[in-house]
Amino acid sequence: MEKLLAALHLDDPASLKRALTTILGAVTLLGINPLLAKWNIPPIDDANLAMVAGLLATFILQSGANSVTAKLAAAKAAGDAAADKVKTIEDAKKVFDEVKP
Amino acid sequence: MKLAILVALLSLPAFAQEDGGIQGAVEVSAADAPLVEVVDTVVVNADAPVADAGETIILRAGEPAPVDGLLLPTAIAIAEAKRHQREAVENASLRGSITPVAWWAIVTVGVLAAGAGVGLGYGLAKLPPPK
Image 1 (spheres, rainbow over the protein chains, first blue to last red):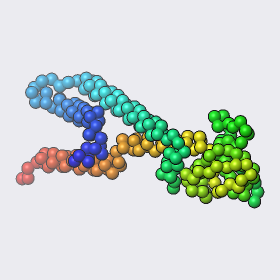
Image 2 (image 1 turned 45 degrees about the horizontal axis):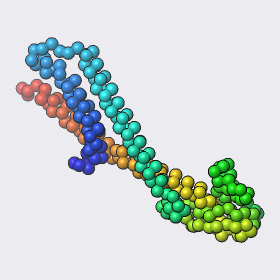
Image 3 (image 1 turned 135 degrees about the vertical axis):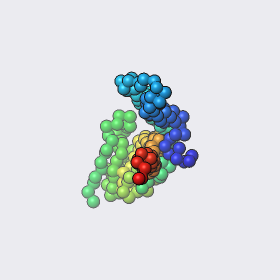
Image 4 (image 1 turned 90 degrees about the horizontal axis):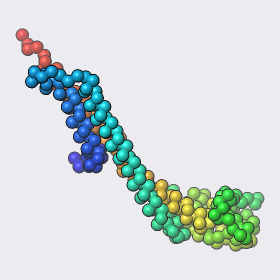
């Protein structure tokens, strides 16, 4: 289970937050009107549901974009740090040895 | 054998030499060595067809080149190694952020199976009772 969560990146809090928001949003939007009808309360207008869905989608997309930006920045920082360690010809040789086909 | 020295990176001003020596990467054949001036400590690039990667060679005027292949002066070799290292680490870092296709397939099949199960159960529950 942990492996599955890790593979789907649900071990990442930001990713888990988006997944939970998606699931809870879908369940709420799909189930709210039947539930209201059961309690004899007038249903929510489709336009209002669409507006809430749009807000949820905006939040999820924005959160995803932030995560991508953060991951790219982290990868770049890691790459720069690794490159900074190559200072001498001996270091360069080691790198060439590693990439040798 | 014909003399053939390819100066590939002559345009790099950072590696210009005052004594007019060869700058940048040079592709050099062992038989073409007489044209090679004093250059620098060089490291053979990993893509070189003949030489061992990482071999350090010092070329002097008139000396035969010890190997065929692409030779890189130290500064360029280090810059190339930095680039290799940066790309390798960045790729490794980003690769960990990608969900493998197999997991997507498993999840997709699971969701479809669950949906089919729910639909089937709902349909069966809605069937009129047998008379």
